[in-house]
Length: 79
Image (cartoon, rainbow, N blue to C red):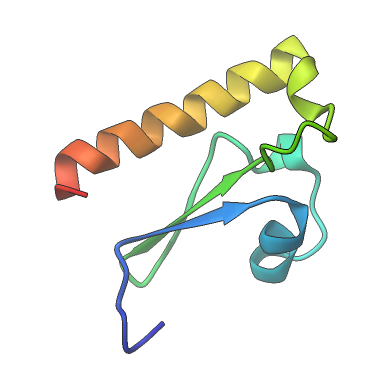
């Protein structure tokens, strides 16, 4: 991470999220982000069709919030 110095890191799926955040439920972290020394970590659910997480309307809202954050960062940081 020190060599690349990314502005944004997408944590896609439970394995990636738990590697950075520890054991946590998706609904407790999707739609929020972590700012670690200027790098923004954005947890996202895995897009696999196997996952049923996005079938829940409340989860869809959290996912939309996360995507809105990403869209804002794309504009703000010219990503």
